[in-house]
Image (cartoon, one colour):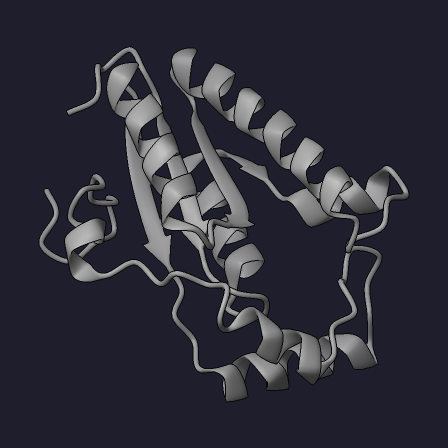
Length: 165
């Protein structure tokens, strides 16, 4: 259990179109949390959404900020997708080592539904919309390591989880 003087990190886990930003916005409002969205920062900086080096630097900066927020007692929501188990493990290990709560919100949405959402977004793009094709979306399927039930049990329960206290 996290030290009451420490905060909580909420990791959003899902592929494009799974609802990470929508979920994060709702959680941020409900829990008075800081939401960290890499796509928004990349857009603001005028970067290329598909430049891996830029994305890695933005995500590292957001991770540092999330640690500072939680060590000061706040809640940080990181919506970078957390596709890799090794990334989720490293963040959970850091949180456990620093008395910070760590939650995982998994958004497992079928590709057909995600493509419908992304196609609609592509038709009316906003300033932070990442333009994706169906081919690119399909290529991500093999890269995503969906957390199984055993991994999910290693994280704290969110206040809204069924059966949580």
